[in-house]
Image (tube, rainbow, N blue to C red; front, side, top):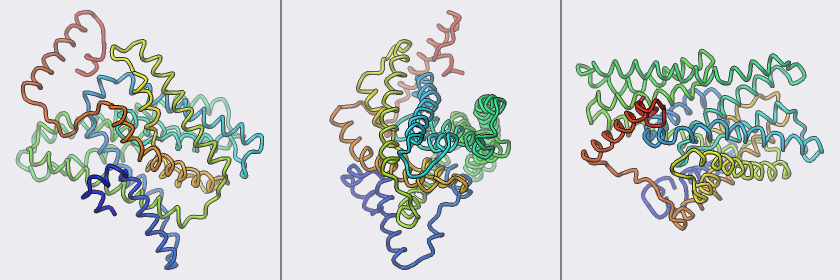
Length: 420
C-alpha cells in the first residue's frame, strides 16, 4: 500500500500518507494478533519515541522551515503557537473536568491528570501550518509541566509550585532556544573550514542538532525548541559552506529519516489500536472531539481578530477557516499519550481517546482538506519553484531598504527582526 501511495498520484491525493500508514498498521496488527504474537512487542517505548523517533521529525520541520514566511509572520506564528496552545489546553481541560464532576465519565480523574491529557491532545501536527511545529513544542513543555504536577500530587501543590511552574515555562523554552543557537553557531563555524574533509560535512549537519537536542534534555530545558532553533539558524549558513552535492545529500537523507520515523510511529498507532487493551467511554470521546474542534475555532477567530488590528495583510475568513480546519492530531499526540505515567487510572481511556481523535482528524479532516482547498481556491506555495538570481537580488535589495527605513524611523518591525 505504501508503494502504491508513492507511485499512484491519484491515490496519494485521495488518501494522506499518515492515513495510509495507519491502515497498514491495522492490517499488520490484525494478522499478528491472529498469529498470537506477544502483544508487548506492539507497544511504543517512551525512550525510543523521545530519543530516536521524535528528533528526525522535528529537525526536518526546522531545517526546511520557510524562514522568510516564518519571520514575515513571526508575531502571528508566536501568538498561535503559544497563546493558542495554552488557551486550548486550559479550555479543553476545564470542560472535561466540569463534565467529570457531574459524573459523565466512567473513570474518575483529577485536574492535574486532565490537564496532562489536554496538553498532549492540543499538539497539532505540522501539516502545511508553520505555527504547528512551535505549537508542538509549547504542548510538550506544558505536558511535562503538568506531568511534574501529577508526580507531586494535586493535594500537595502549593502556591510556590504554581509560581515556579509559570516561571519554568519561559526558562524551559528560552533555555532550549539558547542551546539551539549555540550549537547552530558551532556547526556553522566548523563547516566553514571543512573543505579538507568534505565527506564528514553532512555528518556534522546531523550531529550538531542531535547534540543540541540531547544537551537541552540533559539540562531539563526544551529539547524540541533546541533542535528547531538549531535547524532554522544553521541552514542559513551551512548551505553556503558546503557543496551542492552535500546539500542534496542532507536534504534527501533528512527527509528519509523523518519519513521513516513517522512511518514507525503511525504503524505503531495502527498496531496499538488492534492489540492494546482499550477503555472506551463514548461521552469522553465525543466531548473531547467536540472540545478540540470548537475551542480551536474560537481561538483562531479571536486571535485573528486581534492580529488583524496590527497586520497589513489581513486574515480573511477563508484563512481562518483553513487554520481552524487544519488542526490535525498525529504522531506527537500519540507518542505523548503512550508515555503517560502508569499510575494514572484513566490512562487507558486517555490513550483510546487520543487514538480516536487522531483517526477522526487524519481520516475525516485529512482526506477532505485537499478537496476543500481546491474547491475554495486557496492560494498555496509551490514547493518546487526555484527563484531566479534577479528575484533573489531584488528581494534582498527591498529587505535591506525596508530594514534601513525602520532603523531611521527608530522602530523595530518585522523587517528588522528578519534581518537580525
